[in-house]
Amino acid sequence: MSERSNGNGNGNESENDHGVADAGFDDWLDALKDGRAYSLECPDGHGSLPPRRVCPTCGATSLEERPLPETGDLETITITHVPTPSFEDDAPFALGIADFGSVRLTGQVVGVDLEDVEPGLTVRPDVGVSETTGERLLVFHPQ
Amino acid sequence: MSEVRVAGVGLTPFGNTPERTGRDLFAEASAAAFDDGDVPRTDVEGVFYGNFMGELAEHQGHQGPLMAEAAGVHAPATRYEAACASSGAAVREAVKRIRTGENDVLLVGGAERMTNLGTAGATEALAIAADDLWEVRSGMTFPGAYALMAQAYFREFGGEHEDLAHIAVKNHENALPNEKAQYQRAITVADVLEAPTVSSPLGLYDSCPISDGASALVLVSEGYARDRDLDAPVAITGTGQGGDRMALQDREHLARSPAARIAGEEAYADAGRSPGDVDVAEVHDCFTIAEVLAIEALDLAPVGEGITAARDGRTTADGDRPVNLSGGLKAKGHPVGATGASQIAELTQLLRGDHVNSESVPDATIGVAHNAGGTVASALVHVLEVVE
Image 1: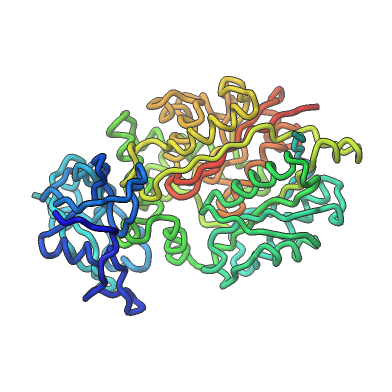
Image 2: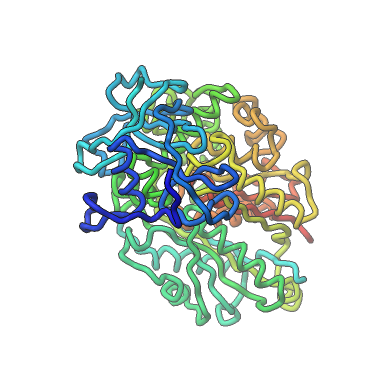
């Protein structure tokens, strides 16, 4: 657990369409890929996600990285058939919101038949790749 | 504090007119509002204008002065942006300005050009109202976001797609005689259930269309209306705004819209009214589930029971308290920046008795309008009353 003054790390290997990374967010995806996923937590235990300088719940400015639980449970899901152009070749895909304790994450549920995706499913977050654009995205593997 | 009167209202037809520019749409709506209100353009002291995706659809920012010009008004103009609640936000700021006594006559409204982007382009443009990093990059669309809320609602409170279908059927029925509506066409529950899925459980007929259109209101102080002997019997007596975390994943409840509850409570208190006083409502039904969340947040239905309000006939035209007599976003259409002010326009006409559906609410004196942005990270609620 490392003390952080803010949620903005240094951009690195990950870049968007303009060749510039989104500091904090892309660093978080890197951490997830390396098995070091985390959430940010203020002294009162409110969770949040980077980039973040202030707790969005209470305004506390001291945020610490806490390891994200290895798995979470899907709270709600949808099968998207009409995507944005960025996911044209990925559709239809399952999108879900999973609970990881102090934070929730939104990701695509992969490696499972779409009809088997349902709320309550335990999932492990990971970094996947869009079939349409080759961009990285947050995915969930059912456990 | 000066009372705010709705002197004139104007709408373009909502629909599929990809070649029409935003400035042309707003010129038509504002001209209709000036005609309706019998207020000279030279009296206008400011333009409060809502628009969401002008940069993407028309490569046009800085739309305030452009729209003042299109309306033939020489006055300071500002564009308000709160996603699909953009013109609701513009209405609220104008109401506050007139109440302070600083202005007596304001042109308020909004416009959106969307269909020129095509379905995929408009879906992408609408998605920028969600959190780009934590939602859109995972593949979230707006139908997808509301579908996640619908599934969460079913899980928490029960309900099924057929309940939602009755909302779409009701709003299409209401739009049948509305010449401004994009869809003047009746549909059946079977049509809704058999339509192609957009994002499960929501299908094509659970979703509002992609629309072009504009809305305009001429708002005046009570003193101006009296001095000019205007026929402006409807006042905006309550205004409220609520906010919430941007991303759906960060909300305490995935099947509620607390920003709208906050906005509603503020608007009711501002007007000195309670939900039980409301005779008629226009709410932000961008998807069928959104109408459920809206009427629950406004306390027009108990939490967990809004899902059956249309199916049970409580919110239909012949029900106790009709909701979306205009046809709602679902059937009237949803040119997003125009929607909030268009709801006030429709409600004003319903209360004045000159709306094509006024006969469904002949004794109505109090109405409420609910306009939402994103997955209700922004909510604007206004109470309208017949005051003379």
